[in-house]
Length: 212
Ligand SMILES: Nc1nc2c(ncn2[C@@H]2O[C@H](COP(=O)(O)OP(=O)(O)OP(=O)(O)O)[C@@H](O)[C@H]2O)c(=O)[nH]1
Ligand SMILES: [Mg+2]
Image 1 (spheres, helix red, strand yellow):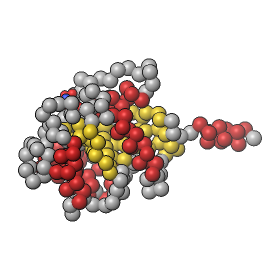
Image 2 (cartoon, helix red, strand yellow):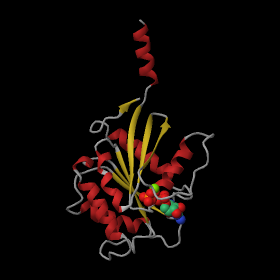
Image 3 (cartoon, protein in one colour):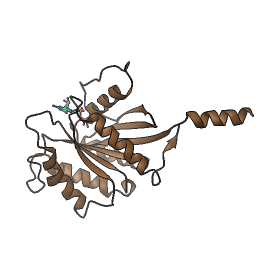
Image 4 (spheres, helix red, strand yellow):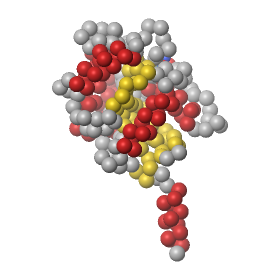
């Protein structure tokens, strides 16, 4: 009887946990986004976000509680020498958030190849081509939209993302979306989490959550 009651209690109080990996070139704004998410979703007593970030070496991890799930965020370093570590997260992640610095992609068109656009394209293609990311929902965040010198999200979508997704290196069919964000001001952060929340659930047959 005790075991039955305990089992029922655990069942009633446990939640699904999904993992999200934050990817993107160094300086894109991953840690700033991560800080904003922690501050927004950890209740009214959460400390303010630490927006004085330093380049990430290794990883920052946190878990936020949403009404129907736990979301575990993995914020990894984007420097070139650290990117080969990303693949170790692919098989256990339920969604990928790829953050782009909208002030560092030239005019946003793949054909022009200005700024770090080529690097960004190659890195995104690499992620999408890896067999362990097959079918995983992908959210692309055009970050730093608060800056005057940013490229508009629609141009990044049409000029870069669409061409990568539709190109031969775009790989498998997956749920994907491009959204605007300013991680620094917090604009678009809630919407990003909401998109991830719905998509990991839609995809749970292919990538089942962990019970916690
Ligand atoms: N203006 C503006 N600056 C931003 C925004 N997001 C991040 N930054 C700045 O960009 C710089 C890099 O931000 P991080 O969040 O540390 O970048 P990261 O992607 O974690 O970088 P790595 O850890 O090296 O991979 C910092 O100076 C941030 O303050 C934004 O939305 N707007
Ligand atoms: Mg970082």
